[in-house]
Length: 94
Image 1: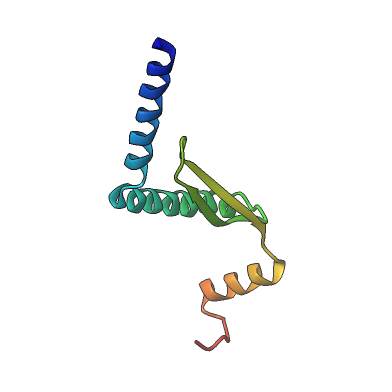
Image 2: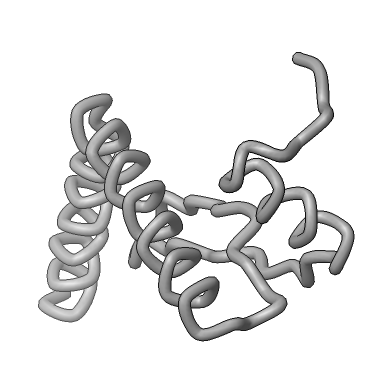
């Protein structure tokens, strides 16, 4: 019966950790952290002249929790319009 008791104890710990990971405060903090990470990584990619950007973030609150980044290639057309926006030369209306 000692093995069964140990398994029951471990399953209880997993359930406790799962409840911890689902707290509203932790979820909010994780979202903020992941968005800051996305912005930093995109700034580095842009600085290095990369045609790729982190386009989205998926959060999985499991054991262990996961942060999954979706990467997309940006088009040359959007790069040109970004440069025009910075220089004040964009004709786009909002």
